Image 1 (spheres, rainbow over the protein chains, first blue to last red):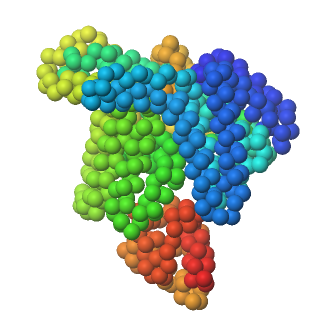
Image 2 (tube, one colour):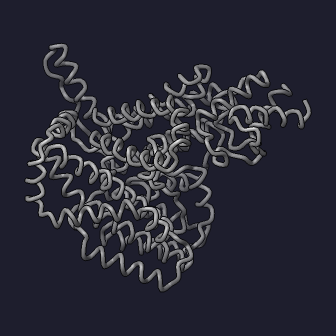
Length: 475
Length: 81
């Protein structure tokens, strides 16, 4: 059941109604039942895996906290994490493993590798396994005590606005909310509806519209040349952000209608002035998770290496970040490239600070533009199906032939492309302004009705309907 | 070691790491409150504390710190051992 469907709206309304009719200390129960029902609709096998993951991390976290000896605590932590990684490995990465083994067998001239059969890929598996792993880490680091109430823990892992594509919740932020869930006020419902409609608008008017051009380009690699590809790279960079931030906004809005606060997942990433800054603004729930549970422990485990400890920690963290996104070499390379850029930035930090002081606002603007282009190029790895397609895009990009641009403009209708350019400019220029305006808590009733009506009108006139999934569902 | 001396020496490490004589640090200060306090700076602060007080701070202990007050408490505990 996707957010942008009438069935979801109906399901959400019924859940809100039942939550309203329940007393504050018992509201976790209808939320849990709704969440389990919501996830059970994806696939029965996936549902069983979710239940197993809940029970497994619930019990191992209790064992982690149950011992005073650090070595025993550590062993239970390891067992818990290995179990979760195995679940991810078996259900998400078996295809990738088959591909690697086929390559190895071909290299060693050992005949054909017999593929291991692929199993069901549970929707949101990367999200709910990371969420539950984060909880076990929190118990291990004594950031929180284990949750003894199985129902409330199950709700933490399966909460339906988050389970498909995050934001990845943190136990210290989410779990205390289950104890007593306050009903939203009329203004808060209005705020949440505004945010939900804003998400719909970003999805249907921006992401899916741009997506049509991007999909077509990646389906016909080889005939577009440099200029068209530069245009497509920008389109995909904006599409990905609009798509994922739309999903996050709708998740935050759905949760808020149920009285639950989920933190923001983006902080205007295309205003970043370097890639380090970009990762402090992009997919905050994942980058925060990686920082706290992978990067920092790795960094401090080798702190005597000084700067090389940072190189080591960044390298491993971003390879994991890449692989988390998908079972493909393109994502591995995406992680490796990010790590390389971040390491370069670390070694040039002092020099860049001097430049920033010397050149002031010019340097700041140039850095933002450069960062945008760097990330746009990196996203080729994110969008392409495999490394052959990446090579194809790069080769096609090497054709500095302006006639290819002229052909493209003629084919696509120049006035439509101007419209797309206008949409892009409005979105990139106004991103922060629109977002802050939509999310202001004290908007008057008249302004709010006007904003919702305006957004619905734009949605009806300019929306592209038909695509169903969000890009991040594949992860 | 008195509380005043501990505070002065902790303050000294912060001044040295941030190269800022006028830096203001108190128990509730977190990384979000000081511009430029990133993970590399965090590493420098912890290494600086280890050198200054001749103690070892483990990764586990670092993960448990949420503000400068936690760092003070950890150092007090380690120096008392």
